[in-house]
Length: 554
Image (cartoon, rainbow, N blue to C red; front, side, top):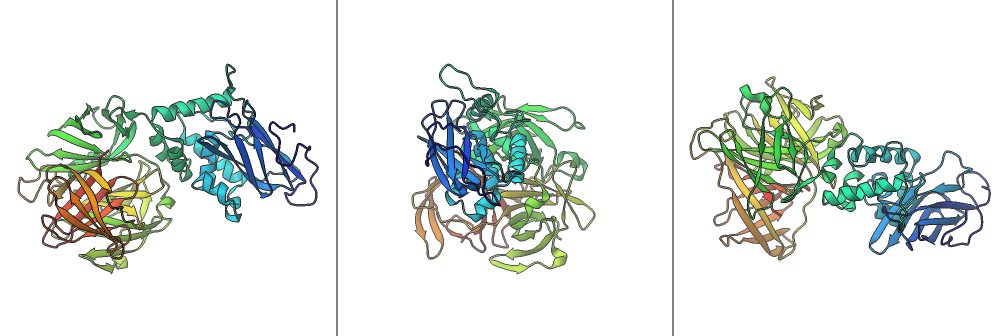
């Protein structure tokens, strides 16, 4: 194996294996480092279960490493200026194999992210027994299949092994081969979608072959809002009546480049509308709906919150959630929830608490909170298990025979939120995986849209009264003025009216903020939906009844 740049221990040819296992006298690893263009003069480092080595890439991006006393698996990294990419070599079927190919490219970066289940750099830096156990031929095959599915329609990886296939990188006036062309296509897709390789890697790290979470990352964005991506969305309308169930959770297709929204259900009459950007308010759009002008607020993760007028004046709200196919097992964990549902009185009432879901979709335990006091839910009060629906999403059987519909959304960092629509205007429940909140820094500013919904607003034509509808849409900026680490609290001021309020993080539980009542500020529970840029909040006091939504602005 003639070396370009050579191995750290010389250029001797690999010797035959000695003894059992995967240990050999010299392990030879070669390949090409490229981003489309060859990475020339880059430093390639390899860490194996036994042995390390370093080489420098040639002008055409090729390298060769000799790892004396090497044992698989191995992780590789190429560094060239700000470019840092990773690759790997898994344990081969035959212990007698001593020479391996490992290209190092943006595609292999995605594969390593999936194998690692997180950061490729973290896997490489640690490379302990836990990291090494992840690198198996089966794990690499799954990573290839997942990346192929994630990039469908953008980069065709059918029949391609990004790690082991021959790669000829473009250099000067010399064009690269077919594998190199896929790197160019990936780079073009990332540039067009205004997405970084790091963001895409993070999304692929927790994806599956059936997950469409990654597709949103590389779909074309709107010119005035990078978070608005072309794709299929699921609308969640908590205000639909029993006569309109077909319009409660149907599919829409959004073309972000033309801002056109089209009803995608084959059983519906063909309809489409075109959104108009609101001047000087990126990611805010309007369009003409059935009862007037609707406002669409696009969150940083691409979920769209819609504030819609009804025929009698009060306002309705609905959500457009990018459609994803998420296996039921990925919903396992502890969730915080906030709900605005009809209780025995038939009035929409806010509630909140926790739910634990197992890998089979069963709600195994939970709590329900009134004020700051939380009690354990009786087994008979827990929802029925989640079951996959062939038409998308999940079902939850209701006590009275109705069926709630649930749709999951996973962010690029792997956090899952769940939106549950009760049947026949029963209300809306929002779940998000529980994770402790961190205190912000003094001086940190947050810009957001905000509105609250009152009792009775989830109806097709609610009566025009002071309790129904929604508050006016506001655009707010708050700035943190004080942080109290001992009390786990921070104080902030609102720019529009200098209102001051205090928020206590992880109160009454991890992942939730509580805000005591203050001048011009009601006492609220505030639940950020992890990674989405959306916050759901509701009243604490029993004599108040509202459900609010805040959406972070660019």
